[in-house]
Amino acid sequence: ICAQSGLPMDKARIVNGKFEPVDTSTSPTNIAYTLEALVAAKDEQAILKILKTLLNMDVNDHGLFYARYRAREEKPSVTDKFISTIDNMNLTVALKIVSQAYKGSLEIADIVNVLVKRQDYSVLCVNNRLMGGLTTDGAVVDWSVSGTLGSEARTGQNVLMAMNENRINRMPIVMAPDIKIKMYVLLSGERIPVLATQDGAAFQMLVPNALLEEESYKNMAVLQKNYLRVI
Figure 1 (tube, rainbow, N blue to C red):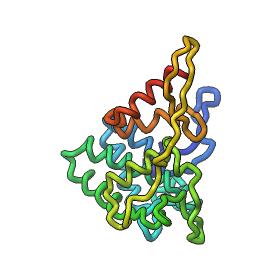
Figure 2 (figure 1 turned 45 degrees about the vertical axis):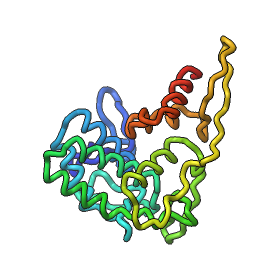
Figure 3 (figure 1 turned 180 degrees about the vertical axis):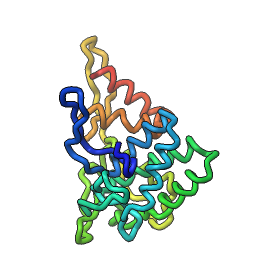
Figure 4 (figure 1 turned 90 degrees about the vertical axis):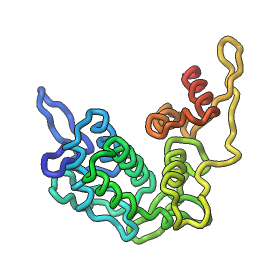
């Protein structure tokens, strides 16, 4: 984590017992997971430093953060002006977690409120479908995960529902209503239903549950348990 901004660097390595930065840039997703880790560590001061830095960082006209920033600067400058849907949504989730963890802190609540309220995801919704991002010239990029139940699609759906995005006429389609549940045969011969994510990775299946309380959805809880039995 950089002393100047409080933000995490993207990559580092340990060489002969010494910390050596490899990539000193950062992303909204890096920042999001760092905030969540700091909530678990109960490090309020580190969280507050990151939030104050976020307030001073450049965003686009819709309050969305860019893909990459220089983490070692007090006011991190932009190095990649692509707007990533999932990067911003990961950060939205983290900010919501921070606000719930520190309900008694007016300073944290005020900053989080400003950061979340200015995010306008309607620019990323086309023909009732959530898209993947915006290029530097404002072109909308399609999203290959839209229509699956991987981590990115589930995060996107939950963020839009939580924010009650009133700038969008209808809730866009992120998760396909006709998603296919596959039957997997265990070595014992037992057949169990398993949800196939877009790439089959455990990350895609399990990570959202750590942040979105998906155990409240009974069918999802069963599918996740079955996934663990398979892998």
